[in-house]
Length: 269
Image (tube, rainbow, N blue to C red; front, side):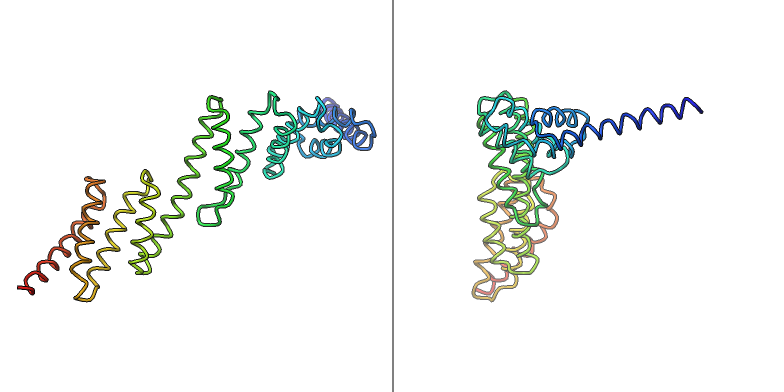
């Protein structure tokens, strides 16, 4: 029991001493004291305390040799606390003030990753997505052989897929609300702009569905031409994906299209 009390007292003493040193550093007019305490807090993962101290002295160290380490730790402290906008600013600042720094490459990667981590879901505004892609691509172009290149490329692929998903969902929406002409036009643009998209198969199927519905529900004078367009959409799907998972529905639509074309041919005789 006595030993337990002694341990508790010892821990409290260390805690109060630590807090006391931190408060002294905050009040100190000596920037080196603040710097040393900031590093100590950072190493102990007391990132918020480190941030406060680094913020107090950042302007004094900008451009000085010691500032190179300060801005990296400052940025990483923000990064560790999830304050990615502030972190990216500090990482960018380090690169600007110390372009030859040993930490320039890591800072460029972390700056780009900060943008990536701020990207919202695919269904909302994609400003951050485009900014993150720019930063990541800049990093890859500048450091193609770095240890971070693989992760950067993976993030780029994820963001490109997210942009494709948004574009495709917009096109699908036209099909759902039965604006088939708009759906076909939007899907054609999507397929042209994203030839290697993971959504290509579904896009081709949706293109077929829109063409089919547009043709089947057309007025008699325009139906033949539109039925041929639907048949072409079927062919495009099967050429690209011979084993498509949409084969059953696609074949059903093709059957309806062929029957309608036969009826038109018979009535013209």
